Image 1 (tube, helix red, strand yellow):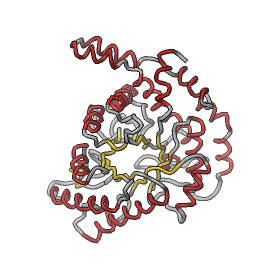
Image 2: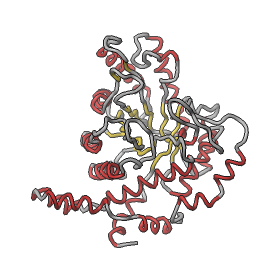
Image 3: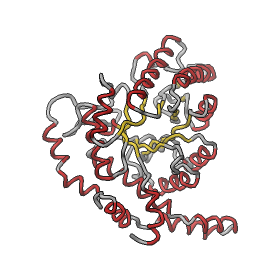
Image 4: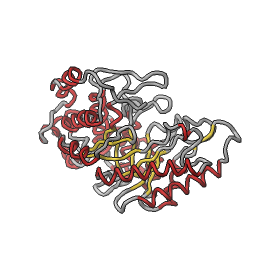
Length: 388
């Protein structure tokens, strides 16, 4: 391990990246959901696959669940199943976008009965959190309008605020609400929570245990995402990440695939703003779909990409950078920043893993383990799980 890396090695020990249960099921485009050999047929099999990611990387101790996609009769048993495999159950994600009643909105609907149905669903999610030990309730709303005049934009915001307040009041003392935003789709004229400012306005009104979730794919092209990260950390309202990558919009590709430098810049701001500290309070999670690649290796590659860019971001000489910034030395400041990004930390990360009893090359170790061939041979029959 090189000397420059030794200074940051201990900081990497606290890295934890939640993996989403739905990443192990079938997914696809808006036109087709593709099946693949070895796809889980139950929530238990999805968790078993997720446990492999943690086994080979040491980076993924929690599995994020989705209700109702992951509904089971016995949540306590599911928690025990996960813990027996060496992982825990993390964020609980609600779903108010796959029910006919929610065609024109859920938490924003004009019909009080439908709003209450959506609120009751979130109450159910909170009950699941109590049983699984989950800390965060994540809410993403596919709500908005397609045409001018279709809905009362201000009235929808008022109803959303009331609904969120009712859900927030049901949370336990150690539980948090994180509100995700997305600038378009499936509503194309206006979206009810389209940006970080709207999410921030709502969670600020709720209380200190309501925070913003930032999905790295939910921004218009050219958006300076790291600025949003810095601002939310400055305001104490960044609760969680959904890491993925996109070339155009919400592509949900493997994190770092399109713009690894952006991932580096984001993680630098996380570290700079204290979000990576032990008490930083930011939950790091993947949110992506593996449409054409095998799912477990896709998740392994993704968590390794986050780890690599975290290591590079930790290597920025912040003292030298601060001096250059104060002196107005534009080129030197950029050189210091780029020097950290361009360092090849992969050999040092391999040594770091070996010191902790992990394989130096997690991807090769997984492929050599035979697990992929085993699940493809064993998981025959039944119904493969997917997000539809």
